[in-house]
Length: 119
Image (cartoon, rainbow, N blue to C red; front, side):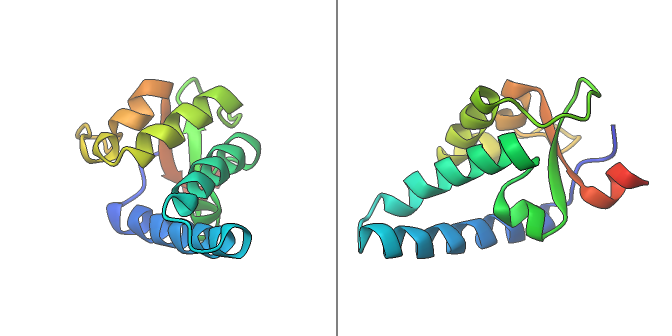
């Protein structure tokens, strides 16, 4: 498995995701307080399951990979659980020395740079 992605790149991806989800929520739901969070959970789960990473991760050159070495994206349930744990904020802040947070440990995934997967 390639090394996990750096924290600055992950944080940038999170900001890109949150900004995009806020725009979509505002366009669809107006000024709803919980709208961006709901859109964020759905967007990250669907994009991670079908494309291998959230919109922000794809834009910043990151991917979420399974640790089983299959090269396939997470299944929809695993991606949804991971997204919910990220939305709780605490799981990503509790992490192992290899950079995998509780959200990754729960579903057997890691966030890595796309370039490291090709090389």
